[in-house]
Length: 320
Image (tube, rainbow, N blue to C red; front, side, top):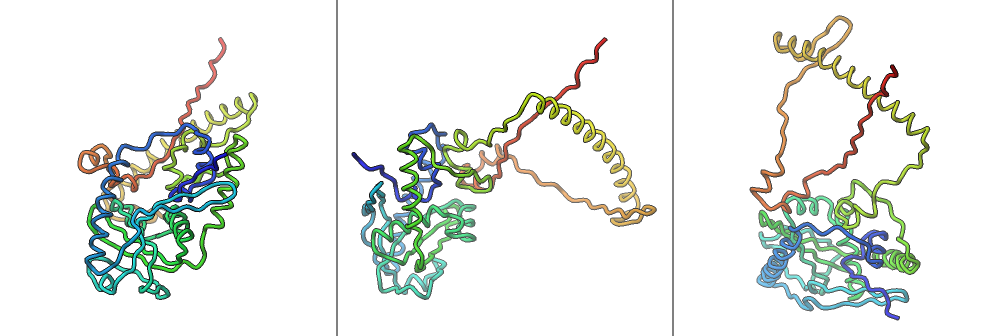
């Protein structure tokens, strides 16, 4: 019997996502810009490796296949390469370099090349592997298979061209945790079940997961008819109070704004009350107009998406 196969590049996924992949659960099609970004990434990877070589770096084992086999599964991956960096790259203005002093530049280390849109590159520079945990899991698997403990991540902003080189020594590998997670995933999938995991609305990884719409919907509430009737009454009462409150505050606001503008004041006392006023422009962005100017993938990371449920309740008809 063949063992389940996982890609090292997906080893950082949550257990529910990984088990869904094994079980062949239905998924949402990836956005159209993803394939274009991948093609652009391949072109930039080739160019960046050439730039590193021109600075005196030695790069070998490009796209070498790696394999880690465990009792329950197999991990496969392909590395961008191994590199022995030169002092030239440290002195070059082409790359902004962040170097861990514990790294011996005379030895080969894992080389990974990543290209991003502007917003994604900024997120990488701010949070590194904490912001991109999948990259850390992938790299740790590569290093475990190669017997290395140092890594060099060459990154580039595809929009502006800024390049960054992050070089460090990994003291604690995430591989033991990955092995434990994948073992649980295989066990759950063998029983036809999804491995447990909680949806994190703040996580970009969760928001981009291809199973988000089908597997990670909010938990269903168990309710009775009596509770539904009570909730409808409460919603109607609360909506009425909210509407009356809005009308009251809007009317009061008109008077206070008029007073502030007529008297050119920002802070004043109204009897026992202290009132403050400020005026400022409110900015908004049209997604459709942006899509006409630049590819969606260049600004997609800056968009915050929230899902809204709308409810409408009407009062019962009065009996004649």
